[in-house]
Length: 306
Image (cartoon, helix red, strand yellow):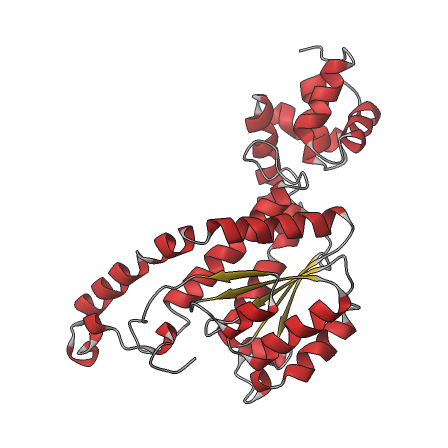
């Protein structure tokens, strides 16, 4: 795609005199430009839904979600991946992020790394990529060789593939089962795709990972019931989650959290069903981890003593 038609490289008519603007005016125009990003994302909801469904299918089969990208895009994939374990109680291997240049590239640019498609294949090989996994290639331009190489390798092993780019008819789209093209238009600072394009990719990654975690039972109502209790703040959050889900007071929530062996899901079911740990765990297992379904099973068995 020529530079003149790739919108991520076009100049923004509203910021031609960016270097002469006051700080206030710069911030105002950036804010106005940022407001357009959610609307651009909204146009791709159907494609984002397909990607989320593919990830749910992978999770159900014991597979993984793997983001692959370079630069800002790669860092955003890693950011989404590392936030899944504390939020949803997942194994760190369930959602992973790969970046061109490896771990060093998270903190600083590794020159030329994104131009090596073979390295992406090697990186995915190291993860033992297989046909139960879903790979999402993230590249604002949609032409990054590392990402395209990763998508090609993923297709060869039978993994599901999606791409997130910020140009229409992006090259990476031709290598993905599910292309997502969020065209956010020219950046405030020409070509600086860490701005609107980065925001768009972060929004899409948020949507895919969150909706797929909901799809495998990691959420009850709108509560993070699989949150990991790794610090005092998260222990308090778990107690609050139990209180909100069951309308019990803080002391009762704390007691049930202890009785449930620090498992908010089990605690909620114990309170809702007025049953012991063993029975609550059995219902949860029968419901494949879905709290609402576990409570429903208990009701059907006549175990609801509320």
